[in-house]
Amino acid sequence: MEKRPTLRIGTEGTAFCKHKFNVINELLADHGYGAIPVMIQVTDGRNDFIRNAEIALLNNEIDVAVHSLGKLSVNTTDGIRIGAVCAPHNPASCLLIRKEAYLSGEDLFLKPGALVGVTPLSILQLTSLKSDLKVKIAEGTVIERINALQKAEFDAILVSAFELDNCGADVSEFEILHLNPREFVPAAGQGVLALQVRANDEAILQAVRRVHDNKMFDTISVERKIHKQLADVSKICLGVHCAKDHQNYYHVWAVMQSDANGIKKIQVSSSTSFELAEDTVHQLLS
Image (tube, rainbow, N blue to C red; front, side, top):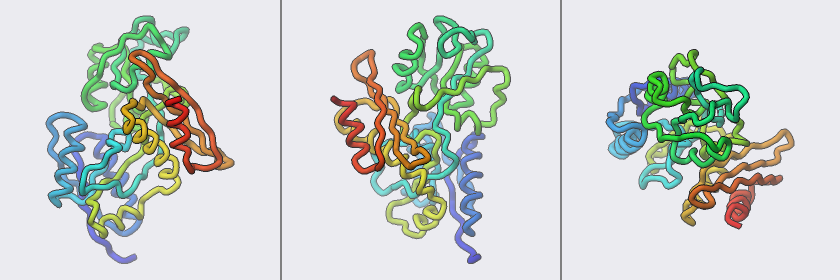
């Protein structure tokens, strides 16, 4: 195989970021590309990493930035594009529960009045499944949130299964409840890795396109399109999940905030992805 260039991959020091680098490194190596990690300075959590990685891309300090697609805005930064999506797709979310708060006879296996660390977009969905929950925004990386759970700052925390599986933390002291993405609908693109590149760098774009998962992109693009269309009409997309069955029919589960305290959740099926996003958004808004 022809020897191809070594790509500079933006990363940071967490176990999850190291895992993401290793995944991309192995995929690129299968096509003859080398990869080296380049540390991105982070002072203020995940959004800081995304922002600083984009700056590093634009300054030609790195060639590729690897992100969890569910954390990326649907509005791209000028001069940057998503060149590929890849990695095993596990869109589910999990509740990580302290054993003293775990109660098998209760909804979500949580004791009444349990305090759960959540993201802002998950609050209404979670409380719709168990109305007596207390919720609080949990800041920081998945490791920082797990540390807060160990210190009993929460009874449980909500995390993505993909992050939990690959963050390197020992969570054996907790109970884990996997939430079906059809019932607790995740953020668009959750569980997928996105490779950002400079929009005008054709050589790097061609390199990352070799690891692009077209089959995954087929459903992920529907999710991202729904999210963006709702954002364009100032509606909050709480979650959207698209999957194909064995007959190649598309199925979409989507959740939107309907008012200050309520949600609207729908399921749409189609034999094609053509106008599937538009149809889903129309049903959510009607």
